Amino acid sequence: MFDLDKLTWLNAHYIKEAPPSRLAGLLVPFLNARGLTTPDPDYLAEAVVALQPRAKTLVELAEKVAFYLVDEVVLDPAAAKKFLTADAVPVLKALMEKLQPMEVFTEKELETLFEELAAAHGVKLGKIAQPVRVALTGASVSPGLFEVMNVLGRARVLGRLGQALAYLEAQAGTA
Image (cartoon, rainbow, N blue to C red; front, top):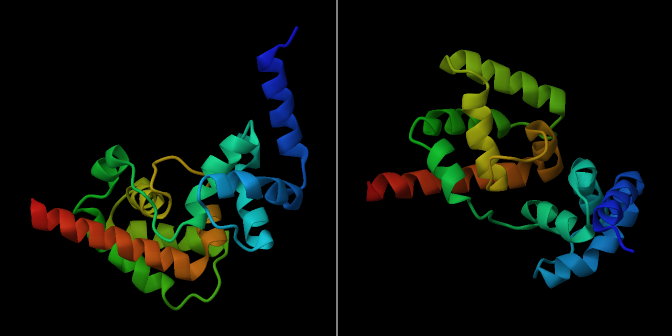
């Protein structure tokens, strides 16, 4: 008799234990089936690392890794409505200015930068982190934000923040 829950648990265990480079290779057909182009294997493996502990199947892993592989994320309407507000505009602009000269992101540097921005704008870290998370991933839930930014890299992060600001500008024009 098949116990689907046990089989899923076992599959999740093997995904967690597998080398990211192996999972990246196994993901290719699942990504292609979703219409996603397969990126550089090293980049994909780096993205997989953040998602491995959360995935139970390769189908689920391909779904979760998708935001790393697109040029423009699809915003979850509820997350965008809640976090991409007019209040976020000055903070997103300030963040872009600070990120522009940074050649390489490290999680520690990013954390320090966010703490400085929060203090400068008199807000809690979440008031910066959540709008940025939505701008970068399209959702309000993701792996650690600084980890996501590190994997995406400077160009993708700046591009997506710019897209979020354009979205906010369009929303302000329709209001």
